[in-house]
Image 1 (cartoon, rainbow over the protein chains, first blue to last red):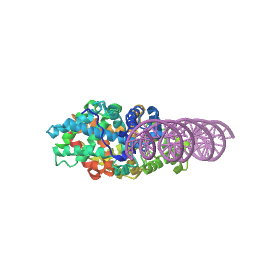
Image 2: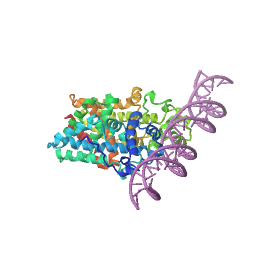
Image 3: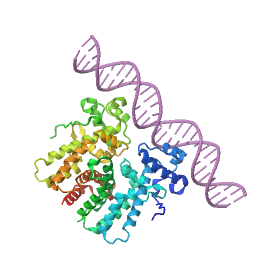
Image 4: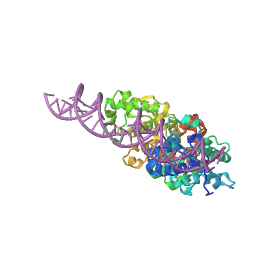
Length: 218
Length: 218
DNA sequence: TTAAAAATGATAGTAATGCTTTCATGGTAA
DNA sequence: TTACCATGAAAGCATTACTATCATTTTTAA
């Protein structure tokens, strides 16, 4: 489980595969650190080049722009999450129990192995919490979607939809429920941290989602 | 109901009150149109000045930067929504029925009176759908929250929390439920339009939320 | 082992962005 | 009528988001 996972991601996400080179790996690792530190808006390739002791031009050879890099990192996280879910629900026969475990992983993903594949997964989770929505909240959503940039998220959602339908094959809104659970997990953790009057505490997010999902599927 | 509502918003949202002057009103109306057209990232005060036949400097006298303007517009929408909810649930005694109506308004707000107070409310709703999260997904959330920039959203949430507790006073996660419903309404409509594989159709969003909320509160 | 190919570095340049400053002007209110 | 607004006009400036060129190093394949 803890050996380095290096998921292969959609080729549209990058110009040159960052997993194929030394500099590529450093771009990934340091961009996670830097975005986590300064936020995505303040993050620039110039600053990244500085901490890498490299140049803007070199980074632009890997990623078209910083938005693509964000989508890459977020996709990486979704893939990683999908493996985590599989791992943690492996050999659990009861689908309700599997859903419980899955929601637990969703809400506690930031605590898991801190250094998979050289990426600081805890920092990446903070980025996902605060910036993942920006991956698709752009004027170019449709084109980006067409190019397959959101495949990893969809794969993750599809697995959860299957699980939901296993619990209740007649539930009429499985996709909406799953995307709501996925989005809500992140947002509730964000609210608990920054806008607490909109949440009921970060410790209760998993319990809330579990109650919500099981009530809906009952 | 249809006379122009001009809600008074938190003074931290602007430098000079745009509701107080002719240019101010034009800034609001045209920014809604322009952001809807080009998206928030591509939107600049320079472009806005051009369509207003005014200058960047003049706009900067009203809003510190485009982020504050976005927060202002979004806050305006939350206030407008709160009035809509009150209006539509007025004199309905059954809280369950009121919640149903509220969720209906949430999901159909983009169809309501197209020109309240000179703002294109349909365009504003599209902006809210696509850009509202960017109001708080920044490195400055905590400071912005401290300054009261998210008050309107909190007021709206608080009213819905009261309604939820009226239905079930023992429900343990009322704030999380309400913020999930509010966020989910927008995101599901966005998904239905742009990432349909994550939704079950834009026509079903209200039904989905209703089922979800009532199941949770049962 | 050497020659071609690929990856990186170094440097420069450019249009646009996100502001700030200053000064002129024209209308309004005391 | 004068003082004070709000707005306009114009300029300036550091940073951003790239692109382009050319030199060097490293890798690879013949």
